[in-house]
Length: 114
Length: 113
Image (cartoon, rainbow over all chains, first blue to last red):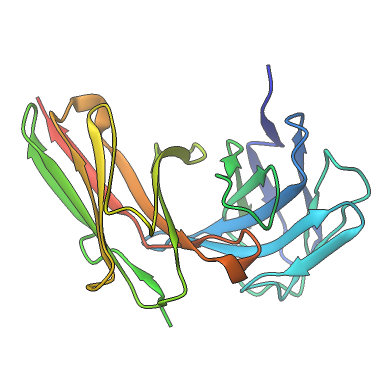
């Protein structure tokens, strides 16, 4: 089945630790995105990548880092510099970043900082 | 600066009736709009979209209306079913956005049996 997988579904982290969230897609999509959802708010864009080995900051990139070494993978690292990391993180992909193509979302990872 | 706004956090309707979810935007460069549906602890799923060259797009029970002059769009669900109970997000993009979507805050729809 084609789709987007995110792992793990639930993640707990101690304050001060870095943690990496996985996102894999087998849809052969060029573009991939990371969003964060907080209660009562919409999805806010953290980082996005339109092609391999290239990525751009979104609206709330501070305290996060990404890499795009393979087309199918776009991991997100939440660093200790992120002041409020507890949130629901969503990864998405689309055929081309510059076109009007719908984004397909993964199931999400809920990160809780203890 | 909230470029896409969904001013109603929640909406409750009776099964079989019409659900109308509203969305306003401020950026006149937006020319493509999407609606997503999201269940708790899951990723959003695409529902329906509309280009700015149209004022209506219909897909089964779902219809999206676009009023460009008012910078307003709405999603109509008729008839509403209990399985439609979810959070609905409006999103917008434009030719200069390189595929980035700007999302509204979401509206929680509850359809009562």
